[in-house]
Length: 301
Length: 301
Image (cartoon, rainbow over all chains, first blue to last red):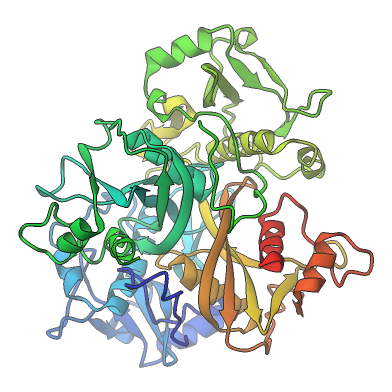
């Protein structure tokens, strides 16, 4: 694909896990003859993984192996094309496999990768996780089977079709009197604060979900919501929708079963935190988190 | 909830299926004692349906019945609270039930409803549909059972938890030289044109999904994407993310397996279509569709 830019005024920093440069080639997914030819092409590549974590080259990039050394019956997911050559990941169909927990080292490994590699790995991981959670049909309980180059599963009993899942999540800064609201969960590293967030529910707009979550978690009432940017988050497959919400008052009522603490911070506080200054009021989220992008956007505007 | 406004500069028209005024009361969903008390309260109400379509009062509003006439074993989904009284919908747990097809009359019935009623019905319908599609566990094939007041299901075998699904969809106008791109599907009423749209995939930002869909369906390359508004669409449960995308050129390459036709229209063309003028260049989408909101936003800015 031609390099594509979001509104750079709105998005000063490219969110982590975005910017993948593979052409997803949707039109080939149901074309068995074309897929067969792509797979036989000696330029075809398969993503190297260690468990579900990326295997890195000495240069710190994703490692890709040749497809022609794989078992011919291996089930492959088509991640996309690059200069005409297909890039795949192997789908191991193991019923009742343990869920895909995030390994302690994956975020460390990912922080070495460039943005395009991070995006490609993220998409691959979301797809593998989805297959593992959909080996059986939710409607009838029958076994399902991958098809469409790994972009769907069909029930072998009732023939229902299932498609890869993405869960929208709203993540937002409440804003009042020139300050922004950041919160923390008890499980986070000491001093770390970030934007509040929550899953969007059926029947809500993005703006309504932002308002509901801010009221539930911090007791603040949104009056106006602005969208800033979005990010695919691969643990397992969220669409992070990052917003800033003006709120009526800075009086907080913190839902301690959801967050441990929330504090109002100034633009200077945020800049110091993003710069990693030792005297900063809080420890910023990591650069690959969309909360980092959101805080940076807010601090700079 | 306090009335909540999205950015009115950005959203001149409230999208259909948004603006529900029930308090979702998330904190009560796992509180069995509170739910039991709410259900016994004589003010508790249950949504009246005909099949899965809304049953309307003579005034054209949603009809609600008393909860205390229901079978005490009926499974209820908590839609939310209004002035302290719980509003529910009954979940009929029928394994292998036929999928929830959209009845020919439902859109007609819905067009009579006010925005709040439309939003409440939309959320209820999305939830009922989700339960029907998740009676079995995707991971192990075991039977699942509703819990958390209908906001989750748990597998009776492996204890996996499942949550209501929302699928993000991008819907967008390409923009070039003061004109916008609208397309049509062969199944639509004659003359109807609307915004192009498609499901967002794992590993994509909203902006990347907009660019991919525009290129796949119409061969145009997005250079800048602006978010406009969002809508929950209840057939069965999409989050519609409406955008305008500047594109490099107005040369089209239409994917006829996806859309039948696409045309460039001016602001005056759109205004005439939205006004329903007989000489208009195309027939506009219905008012409850977010494409209507998007076209109106674009024509007025």
